[in-house]
Image (cartoon, rainbow, N blue to C red; front, side, top):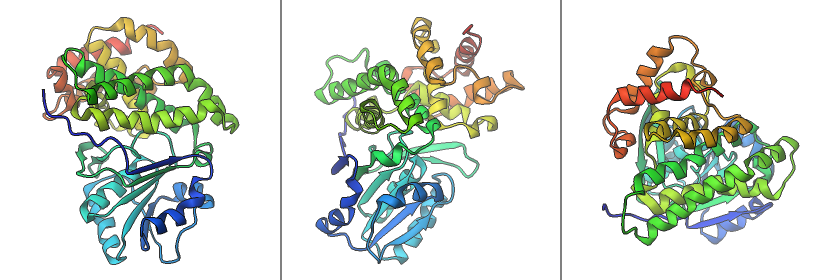
Length: 357
């Protein structure tokens, strides 16, 4: 068994209504005086009401995906600003850029998520894409994020599609960790913690996800809503943080990566594609009974269960081939399942796409 490196949590996590009222106090307590804020137009509009920052703060608007080119562009700007802390305000792409810049600069990073679409605020890694929007690689950084501040009042105003995608991405935590660890004996305690978090992700999201989406639709700060966003960000992040290579990604994320090579899917969110990847992974495992159990939840949550739902309606056979080849490229995590044949993946995609629902 490979050595597990535990980067279990940020240095400090705070999540409650009003947490950002304390931001300037926190900056002062931790001796940060020259922050750089990386943000987007929508994310800053959502968060600025709740954030007060020192006058000497520098603001940098991000440009698209988390690419190595974008990280380098922002890094140059942060160097010019003589910053002592990076603050990322936004969704997964912005938070990943902030972590990438912090790692290159050797600077602490504070993350303020404006969406609950994934666990990017918690995990000490960034997912990189090329300039065409295709998945390139993910990099695990030497240090965890310094501080994560979750303000539920920001998330309650986010589009429902992002919460749905976060649920889809986080349900995958159990299935991807389970397939990698099912035969491992004995399991170290760190891995047991990761698997407990993964099981919690699946159970809480399937049981309470609908209520959280209803709360978001009505802008109601319910108990279920707060539990779901913390499950996505915290529990979802803990799976990889404690499980390392056994808790990050396997089949479902490789299917996601393969989907990125089909341009019609670019308009769909990461978590939606991962959710479809869960079904394909289960088909590869010959666990269609589990797929049948998941379908009612998927349909209730409006998660994609077909290629059509992901925008693929023409040249479907060719698209399946592209997805299968992309999912099995060298270095893809699906190989951790012992799967390397694109034909096997293509057959599983067709099996899911042809299911009667």
